[in-house]
Each structure stands twice: as structure tokens, then as C-alpha cells.
View 1: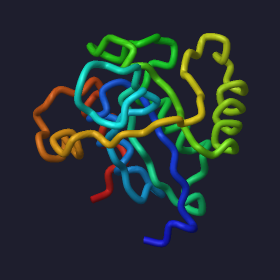
View 2: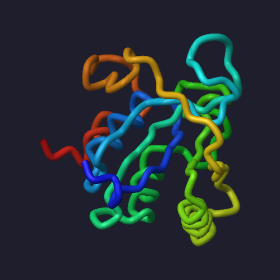
View 3: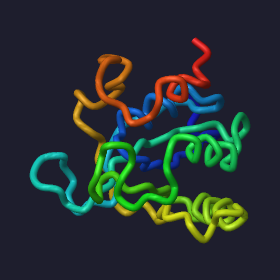
View 4: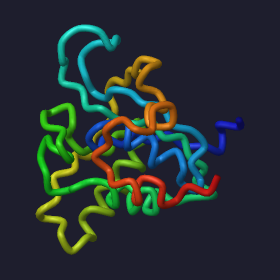
Length: 163
């Protein structure tokens, strides 16, 4: 994989199982990894440390634009809900777009500000300060256990799957 041509962005949209399953099938997405963003620890053990469940998305910007990724993301979240997506409730289920690249954050803010519902949107757009990959049992969870719970409707979850 030639990562020089690839970009990385992190999407938090409720339970990471569904977000990863949805994102990994999108055109232009090279790979995904379930994880935790912007917590205070470097491990997955222990108590909740302020993190958001998220998915690390590596994508080819020549194959998919940031705005198109934002379009896809907004299909699977309720952008008006604070700390709740589907039946999942709590700060770790907040919606957010994280990146280490300021251009990504600027693009996300511009995307949101241009929407007609911008004043109602509560999706955080923040610099990624800490990322910890989830444990193996959470990686590709819905691929490996397709009957597990997912807050994203099945028909939407696989809307862009081509294989």
C-alpha cells in the first residue's frame, strides 16, 4: 500500500461496529480500523477516559473527496443528537470528525457550515490528540459476527458494498 497518496481521517458515529462496516465498503476507502479517539490513556483497558468510539479511515483522495466521505458519514448518523446514536447512549457514542490534518478539519467545518441545517448540527470537529486501536474482538465485528447489534439499518449498512 502506497500511503504517500493516502489520507487518514477518523469518524465517530455511535457504536464503532456499524461505522466500520459501513465505511470499509465505500469507494476510495483503502482500509479501516476500529478504535478510540481523544481519550486520556494509551490502552483500551480500564474505565472510560473520555474517548469517542471511532473508525480510522485510510482513503485515496484521488478516488474519493473529503466532501463525499462527509456525505457518506452523514447518511449513517443523526447529526442533531448529542451523545446518542440509535440505542447507544453516552459520551463515547458522540458524533465527531477527527484528524491530525488541519485541512481535513477546515473541510469538515466548511461542509457543515454550508448545510441548510448547520445551526442544528452537533458533530464535533476536532484535532485528533490520541488514538488507540480497539481490541481484536472489535475489529471488523459485523463482518465476523453479522447478527450482532448495529444501530445502522441493514439496507443502509451495505448500500455501497460491491463485493
